[in-house]
Length: 194
View (spheres, rainbow, N blue to C red):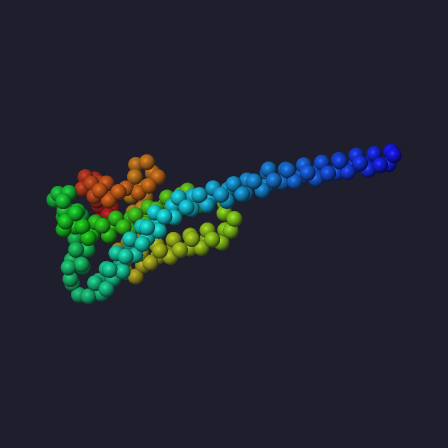
């Protein structure tokens, strides 16, 4: 009987230790990783739609621009050669300078969403880091494309465009109307986008 009681007690003690080990592993190893992964996914989804929409709008604009830019001087090239310094009223940005202003806004919009994304997501842990690396590689390719091949935009200048487009709260880009108003009112801001 003492042997059965001893086996029973050792079994309870061993089972308790194993259960405690599983509980500690779950609490301190598994749960934090799962929570971080869920948090990372939430951040991804928070920025995925607006970033995707901004990229789509910019791609649509650039696809329309490229064939026209290959031709000799035309209305499109003339509109893009204007300067915000030529604005005599706020109406200039929505009339004569609209094509230039809206194109600069679209480039800055994509860059701003990228800046927000990088700022909030870069330190989160993902279950598969290769997906994160692939996304950051795509961002680098975008910046190289926009700043390469004779472009007047420098690689880090694209970052600056996005940083300047952040709204005062720092959690989203400015709207187009805020952008136009700031171009008109703020000389340093206008110079940066010129």
